[in-house]
Length: 228
Image (cartoon, rainbow, N blue to C red; front, side, top):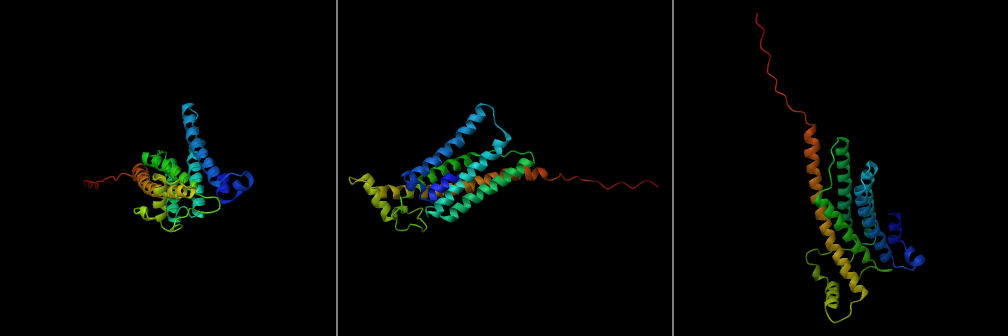
C-alpha cells in the first residue's frame, strides 16, 4: 500500500525507473489484489486458516482500496463524496463484524459484498490507467461532476469513440478519455453496491446480534392471597 501511494502521488516511477506511473501503479494494484485472492484460496485448500488471517485479511483489503481511492481523489479522477461513502461503508461494516465476533457471531461476506470488491478493483484499475504522464485526461468537465446518465454529451468522449470505431487512428488521449469515462461509470456501480451490501450487513447484525440480546419478557401472575 505505501509503495502504491508513492508511485501514484510522486514522479518516482518516471524519474527513477523510466516507467509511466499509470503502468507501474496498475501493476502494483492488480498484483496486490491477486495476492489477496490467492492467499485466501491457498490457506483454505491447505486448511491453514488462522484467526490472525481472518482479522488481517479484510483490513488489508480496505487499506489497499482506501489508499488507491484517496490517491485518485488527489488526481481529481474520483469525486471525494463517492470515496467518503465507500470508505465510510468499509469502516461501518468492519465495526459491525467486530462487534458481532465478540458476541460469537460470524457475519460472513455476502455475494453483494464480493461483487462490490470486484467492481472496486476494476474501477480503480481503469482510473489509474487514465493517469497521464504529467497531465490529466483532457475532458472539458474534468474535476467537475461527471454526467452519469448523459455521459455521451461530453464532446471529447464522442470524439474518442468515433476514433475508436471509425477509420481514424486512436490516440493515447482518446484512450485516456475512454478509460476515465469507464472508470467514472463503474464508480457509480461501486457506490450503489456498497450501499446495498451495507444494508445487508446491518440487517444481519440486527437479526443475529441485537435481537438475540433482548431478554424474553416473562409474564408473572399476581400471587393468590393466603387463606386466613
